[in-house]
Figure (cartoon, rainbow, N blue to C red):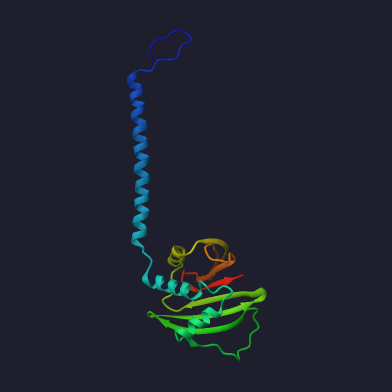
Length: 198
């Protein structure tokens, strides 16, 4: 530090100021490089684990079958008629559940098998459910594939020792009370998913 008059501001040598500037520039460059590395790493991770084709096919079937089913279950029955799905509904089966099953079909399509069930509940609630046979979609890939097509907002998360149930409001479907519900096993395999009109 150079000598200065009493009351005047200290004079910093030019060399010291330049060193500080270099430190700031290097710190900023390091932060930018770290951020870029993190983004590159995340992108690389996503590329390493793409959504399996079977999962995309299963999600496309779910959405093609149930996306427009809220309060319109006859649309699912008409789709079943057009595509010659095999009805497995037993009218003689006693029902004690508040949800009344109105349609059930076994479907074999694109090398995968499903059971599609529709039902109604109190207060005009409707449900369109797709049960997945092996290979069942993995939970993370399933949610990623659905999120590619729909705007989801989580409204319920219910983990159990052997299963995990999740509920999401489908924000880009009208009416706004349409919910996606799916249940996965403890190892992350999705058993079934439903689109519900509440």
